[in-house]
Amino acid sequence: MSVANAPTGRADVARAVQSIGRANAVRGVVIVALFAIAVFALPHLAGADWVTTFTSVAIYSIVALGFGILYGRVGLISLGQVALLTIGCWVGARLAYASSLPFPLLLLAAGGVTCVIGVLVGLPALRLSGLYLALVTLMFAGATTVVLSVTDFPNGGGGFTGRSAADALTTSTPAVRRPSWAVGDVAYYRYTVIVAALLFLLALLHVSGKPGRAWASIRESEPAALAAGVNITLYKLWAFALASFVTGVAGCLLAAQVGVPRAITFQTQDSLTLAATALIGGIFSIWGAIVAGVFNQLLPFLFQAVWGLNPNFLLIIFGVGLLQVLLTAPGGLVEQFPKDMANLARLLFHGVRRLAGGRGKAS
Amino acid sequence: MIEVGDLTVRFAGVTPIDDMSVVFPGGTCGLIGPNGAGKTTFFNVLSGFVKPAAGSIAAFGENMLRMADYRRARWGLRRTFQTEMAIEKLSVYDNVAMIHEHSGAKRSSRRADVLAAIDFVELEASPKAKVGELGARERRLVEVARAVVGHPRVVLLDEPAAGLPDEETRRLGGVIQKIPQQFGALVILVDHDMTLVSSCCETTAVLDFGKLIASGPTAEVLRNEHVIRAYLGTEEQL
Image 1 (cartoon, each protein chain N blue to C red):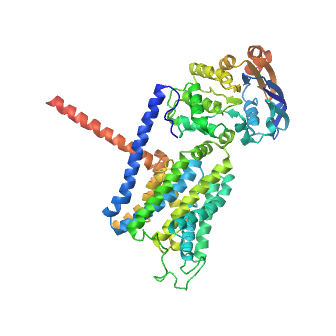
Image 2: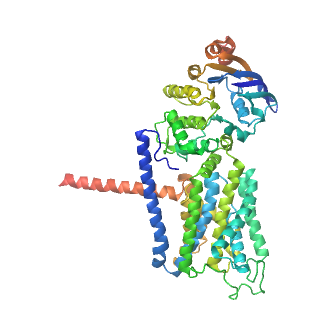
Image 3: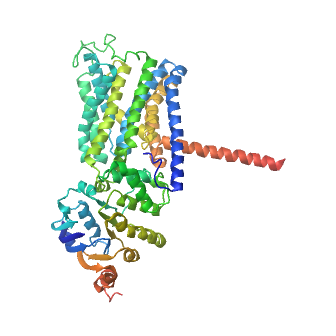
């Protein structure tokens, strides 16, 4: 919230507010510039494989954003986020087969249904926290995986519940449609980035507003939040609703990206990897979610397609990374990296100055 | 005015508050007693975290025990805790605004009210500074600012000066003393620092093992031999 034009009449306060305003403006310009590069320049610089990977990065950034809202803001550990992604994907795919709704409405419907399910999963969170909540949500993720493999998700065929013949998942299965003006991979990548940006904006509005402050107070101490008159039930469920909504939208984006989503795409353990990468990226800043998306999707691609390594090694790297983050940089890479760069710059600056000084004396 | 009548709190086998009857007339009232005397339990009853076994509490004519816990902030009850509850990751402004948002006070006056509360506690740091970056005294001041924003009627301060050096405690006392006049709220101050209590509080009540052993004008209470004995042990031990 801005406190510009504050009627305090204190010069130092006014000055501080002014400098904060400037810092925000600089940050805004940087974010808009990065967004423009991501939308316009990146697809031209990268090949076709890269563009699909970047689309996945954007989608999983949204999923990490949902995890970050729950854990980073309210302190609720949910290990069922990839299950919610699956549900969004399922609803999006089935609705695409069953109806001729425009794509943005598919996104909203997938987000809405996932939101309702996410809130139901969040109900235990009103009583449970910590390890117990983590277990309950992990069980939910497991249950979703089981149900999907039993029902042979997603299986082509018409209608909402339609199934096609035994050889359903062949080339004859129709792909989940994409928006009419974003059918190609590059155009769909741009579409995904724009939707992701809108969802990040939605999260940012929440986090910097009244809900964000209420969540912070719940995370700090529930008794203190209660004493401050915060409706803890409402705000916890609100967090689950927002996190599930964005994850459901991401699921629908994923359905149209892969065209024919398969049950094998979603495994229970993915929720754990997601949690690990979200923590590595940085859980207290919503921008950490982008780093998490990169770790989650770009690194496996680099390992497999570019370097020819087994992507399972990544689990070890994530494990080590997680340990490192938990021990030395709880704010994650997104907080630590700028500090490290500033330190490096200072070191270089001092080094150069010393060198220059030394030469000055020598001559 | 807060009237407490025959208040008793029992936890399985323990009676942290035992038949306590006292009147907090207004202004700044001290509530003192050795560790475990029941001071924080009394605050928890006022906050609604603890349900008393018997007794009544009327604050400005309102039956507090009937009021749901989450409604009490809106009614005008504010409190601090022994541990710091100012949120480190939020700015000073957001910390205070968060209390204002749930206090039922008008949205249009939020910015002015919040900045006035920050000004009132004489915080030197910028309202935009993160609380986690402030020193101990400044964080305590933020807690006091949180306790006075948005039309408070009763302000409970639970050891606000714990861990502060004497000079800073004195300055904090100056701020606490001004709360009743500035905001029209009744302040109940729990602290172990007798200099702070005697400089801030016109009246003081003393608890010992859950029982009220004295109450009245602070200077008189602090001379009371029961009080001296409760604090310092028996005279033989002296």
